[in-house]
Picture 1 (cartoon, rainbow, N blue to C red):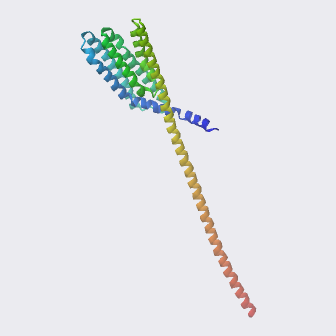
Picture 2: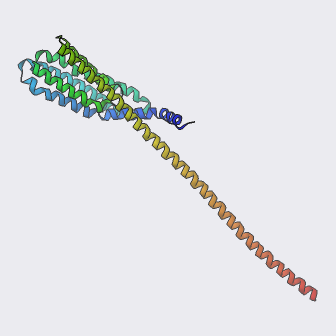
Picture 3: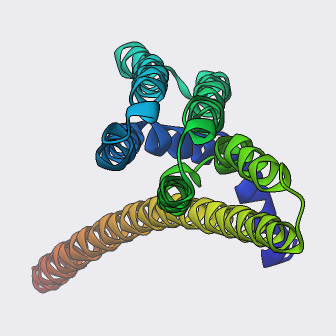
Amino acid sequence: MSSFEAGEIKLEEHAAEVTADQVRSLYLNAPIANAATLLGVVLLGPILLIQEDTQLPYISWGVVMLVAAFLRMLIVFAFHKTKPPVIEMPRWANYYLIATFVLGCSWASIGYFVLPFSDLESDLFSMMILLGVMAAALPLLSMVKWALCLYLLPCVLMIISYFLTVYSMENMAKSFVFVVFYGLLVLSSFRLHNTFRESLTLIYQKKDLIKSLKQEHEMLEDLNRGLRQEVEVRKQTQRELEKNRELMSEEIKNKKQELRLFKQN
């Protein structure tokens, strides 16, 4: 079996453990993701609250965002309390994906709660905040492959539909830019996901290698111990042989003296 084939087998052997580690990292990053969500909502406040037409829509949208973020944190608390085994990690990953998609839809709902009532300057500022949220989500959601895609898709569709409500070449170009930006983020997320997975797999392979080396070291120690015991036994046997040889030589010498005395008599 080639080393490449052996490496693939090890990847398969550790696939469940690697997935479990990725899901744990996803849940560990959840508080940071929620903090970023709340920060984005707060940043939109100053420019939207000063306009009378957007105060109530902004508050309504903010409530929707807080509820969505709270629901995701409930799932996070349940995960840490349950401490699921490795075999249940894919199910908990799906729970997080659903919560993330709901939160993404909540972000996209700004297009229905706020943007129709705000001016162009406020709309552009809101778009900039959404772009920042999309970019910031990249390292936080890339642990699970489709998390970022589900999170950003509602926002991208909302932004494109917003630009296309008034048909113009400029708006078509803006929509195309957002599609390209979304595609690049998703591709970057996939690459980052694969990088994380390969790194975790290498860690497990390193642990296997260390374990194998320890086992081989213990086997060599046992072998050396056996050899030392065998050498000691041989030395003891050699000493006993030398002792017996000396005794036999002494006995032969005594017999010769007895025989000589017997002949003299």
